[in-house]
Image 1 (cartoon, rainbow, N blue to C red):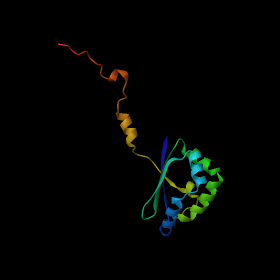
Image 2 (cartoon, one colour):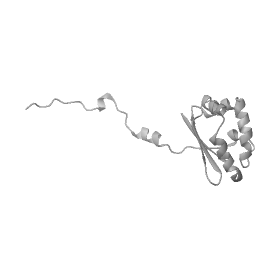
Image 3 (tube, rainbow, N blue to C red):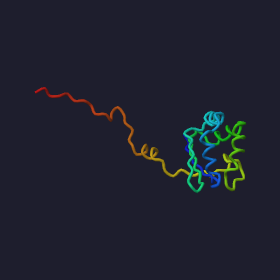
Image 4 (tube, one colour):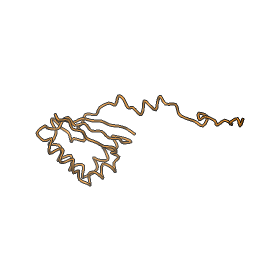
Length: 129
C-alpha cells in the first residue's frame, strides 16, 4: 500500500469556509474517492492555511486518474480551486507531494524476527517426584 502525503496553501481569509465545506463533502464525491482507491484519506489544516493531506492507495497515479474520469471530481475541484493560494492547476493535481522518510511499522517489521513453529518453546515433561 502506498502512503502519500501532500501540501497545499489555503487562503487564510477562506479557511473557515474551507473547513465547513469539508464537514459535509458530497456523498457522491465520498463514494468516488472510495471507489477509485483513496483510503485512510485525511486533511489537516494549520492556522496559517497550510493544508496537509494524507492517503493510502495501491497506486497514487491510478487513484488520481480514476478521479479525473469522474464528473463529480471536476465539479468539486472547480469549486475548491478558489480556496487556494497561487494554484494554476486543479487542487488534486497542483499539490506538493512529500517524500516519506520514516514509517514506524516498516522499521519495526524490518527489525522484528518472524516467528516460526521452531521458535516456540517445546513443553517438557514434568518430573513426578
